[in-house]
Structure formats: structure tokens, C-alpha cells
Image (cartoon, rainbow, N blue to C red):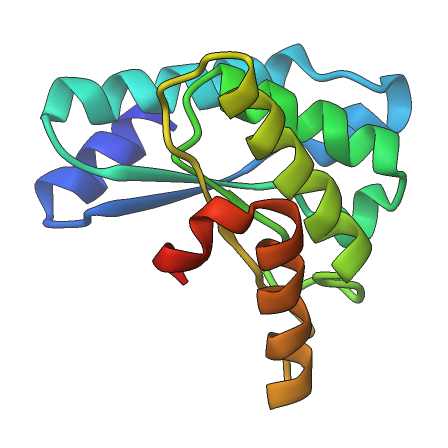
Length: 150
């Protein structure tokens, strides 16, 4: 994965999407492999000097708020610049419930003194203006100070 990341960055990529090992979380409610992957890819990006790491949680597969929270916390702790709900390739993509949990993790990191800014990317299942508006309203509710960034 590190070589693929370096190759992508060398070829001009400025964003790297990394899917966590969500099946590990489903089996044991944790994933040291995911933590190592996120950390390792982040190191490559930092060594390269530019790039953004989007960590995809596959929240539609995780389903449980507890697993979504744990995977989001792990991703943030190990270097994610963005948390992304889904690849869009699984039967269930984004949901307002999953986005709320992810936003709460981002908020908690900020309240705990983290100076790192983390974004949220909603993917999979947003098909209408009303769908998008629901997510915008959710961000305004959970992170009202971030409304200027929308």
C-alpha cells in the first residue's frame, strides 16, 4: 500500500482514498491493521510533502454506531484528513445516523484540544437535493461553528 501511495503521489495525485479493514471491526470491534494502514499511508503523504488522506469507513457495512465511532476515532488518531462514509460500492452507503456519529467524533477531537482539522465526505446514497440538505443541516447542528466551511 505504501508503494502504491507513493506511486500515486509521484504521478500527481493529491488525494488518497483508503478503505479501512471494516471486517476486522465487525469481527472484533477493533482493527490494528486499519490503524497501521492509516498511519503508514499518512507517513508516505507527509514524506512526499503534499496530499490529503481520506479514510473510508464503509459505515453501511459497519451499521453499529459503536463500530462507526471506534473506526472514526482510530482513523483520526492515526492521521485521517477526511472521514468518508462509503466507497459507494456496497449496498448501503451513507446515512444521517452514521454521519452524525462521525461528526461527533470530529467535534470531540476538537474539544479535546486537537489542532488537526478533519473533514467529512458523504458518499453513497445522496441522490436528491433534499438528501444533501439533510446532511448540511446535520453539520450545522453538530458543528455550528463550521457552517462557514460549507
